[in-house]
Amino acid sequence: MKRTLALWGLLLCAPLFGEVFYEQKLHVEFESPQAAKEAQARVAKFPRGKKIAYTTRWDDSNPRQLQLSEVLNARGIKATCYPNALSDNYVKILGKVLGAGNAAGSHTMSHPFLGAMLACEMFNENALQRINIESRLDTNVVASALPYHHYRSPVWPDSAKILGLCITRAGYMSAPDIGDNGAKYSLPDGNVLYSTSLFDANDSNPDEEKYVRELKRALDAAARRGDNHVTLGVHSTQSDDGMKNLGRILDNHHSEDFWYCTENEYCAYRRQTELSSIEKIGAKGKVATFKIRRPAAFTLGSDIGLFLDFDRTATRAKLDKELLKPDGNSLELPHPKAFRIPVKIDHIAFGKTGGANRQSDKFPGIFASFSVDLSAAKISAKISNNSESELSRVRIIAVTAPAYAKSAAKTYAKIPKGGSVEAVFKLEKTEFAKLFEEGRLLYALQIDFLCGSSPSRIYLSKFAEFPIARKECPRDTGMAIGTFTLDELKDVDIARMSSPDTPLKDFKGKSWERTQSDRYAPHTLLLSGKKVKTVWRPDAVILAAIDFEAPSDGEYDIKTECVYLREYYLNGKRIKLSGSNKVALKAGRNRLIAAARYGILSFSASLGGKELKYLAPQTGNVQAH
Image (tube, rainbow, N blue to C red; front, side, top):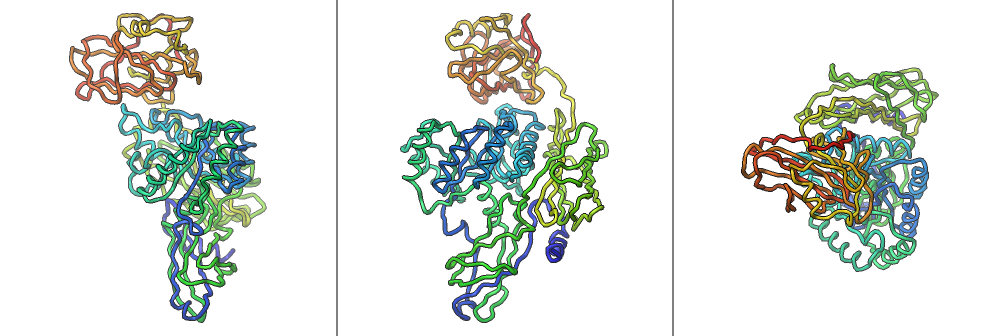
């Protein structure tokens, strides 16, 4: 332990934002002194000579993930599940999945349309879900999967960039979704968010021809991207027979080239290959000595070791004091216990006042206080150790939104029994700060430490509340009604409602409602509320109405996005709109109605970059949300 603490102090003398590095000495015995003298080592791209990383992605909090994981595990394939809601029953089921060697990622807390949300909510949905999953299940979460694959809005061009930054600042290293993450999020240098080639075989009724076709497409795309990472998914909604069929398909197309791993293992291993270095420092007799510099597992999310390939046959090896058995020319270097992932994780959530000294539930005797002082632009915490164990290798990082610059980690060699440490992080605003001044915003600290000799973690969190200004915008003036079935609505009825001179009235026993949301951006109307109920039904229809005023006759810039759109209607007529459009309008009040199955309506009407005035539609049946 003394050597570990000395090394800790040595390697963390400089401010670090991401990985923690440590060094090891590796002694490798070869078949002859000449072989030892000539031997060279390199970091293997994938473990055990594999050529393709093959992960799986299973969305939502679905109890059938347990059965699906059993189908996969029986074939040497691992599942990575991406829950949203964390009910007590589902947590028990996911615990069994994880206990079999699988992994968990995040699918956000409430499964929203992320690209249309307030910036604060983009961050909250990602950051708090990671904290919740880790602390509820004592697991490590490194990947975030988009609900609905939704990450941007044509009405807000910068939404993708803000969301990408929120995902990385929440602590994720991977987003297994459609498209290359670096490109679609325009991530600046220094932000790591690994991509994949996502494919499926049909969620409900797996189809072998589709599996073969989609796998080939995924492999081709992964080869072009250069990471050779593919992901099968995305829902575990197969029937019992469907799961058996999926198992048969996987048997038929098993490949020795595939590394069947979890997303955590992929991320941790890839990051090691990018950051680890190996230097040969000498040879004596049959033994060559190498110096390894590598990132600690607790910053990577998995204990998977680092694999080395030698150009000579190795017979024996010793890593520091641990004896290892090479596999021919290959050798796995495990992480020492002190640098492995935490095995117990707690979360202390503070209320509005913050600051209160609270005891950890999972680590009796460890107390923490946490406060957010926006006027002084700082967050601060005090960690007190009244437990039976000394705390060592303590590292505290601030988990903050892109509104603030990244803060350097605070590190402490130890907190003795009866001792305490205080950590203060300045909140230095960035160019994005203005975007995070509406709604609730999460502030958190991640504390990694050794409790005795056991890797451990505690999160501290608190929300700050920023006022939401109600304004003339689609979110606050728009209205919705539903749900209807397709046979309840005729084209002529919707066209008539879209006439700006027609008051919106009850229809088929349902009333129009102003579905104002405290979580979505001003340009986005949420198609659900107290009276407007969404249902997952193929023939479901919700109508959304937005009124706006054109100052004169002319051609205007109209931007729209309606997830699960059926049709648009403008001023009494059906109209085709997609993304950015040039539309001729008459002076005065105009009305757009979107008929959709579900989702959101994002809308912008402007002239020369100046937004038009939004109006509340005339109706006597308004219900505020």
